[in-house]
Image (cartoon, rainbow over all chains, first blue to last red; front, side, top):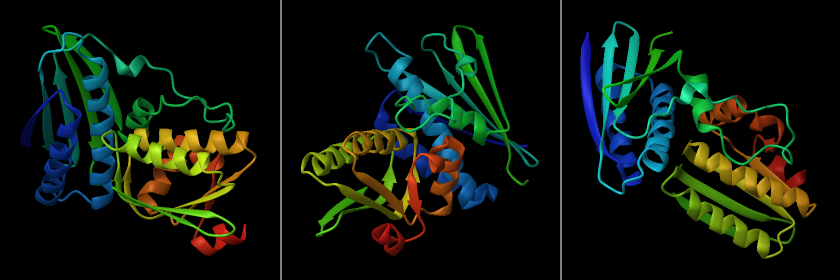
Length: 138
Length: 109
């Protein structure tokens, strides 16, 4: 069992920090470049939601991202103290619609659900826990 | 991200390189809207150098596609890297965009 932690602030510019962190983690934990790409996407979507919609007080907040590797199973947990929000409840987009009918946006959480094997949400101690699991050696 | 616009007689080629994410998707949107407002009737987006895209980037692609359909123009994508192609497939975008394997195929379409 190995673990790493990354702390970011509620600013979009932190996404570069996440990308660099994942590149290093990929090398260290032997995660393929294709999967690093996918994990980067997943974290961007999750963080974007937290940064854009999680806080209404205009203050600086920190978001904790835990990475746990147990054999081939990678678990990423995002912890924030923003407004309570369970992304797993969001309805999936209708992929059968034409380009004219497709609404703009609404793909972020869907991408997370499709890429990860398991997406769970918990709210405890006034914090949001988004727990994402993926087999990194399928 | 690097975006380059090249106009030729039959089409406008937009080459995008690097990462399109939440931090810079707005920049790409501005460029694309300027190309459309400039009267382009066929836009080819060459994604050969595009190695990362998130939903913010997909959003811009869909905005362009909707505008071009309304204007009865053509919006073609080509040279998608495998990772980008996979995101297109997952999002259902492969069926609502004209995606070509290479620039030549997009030009002759």
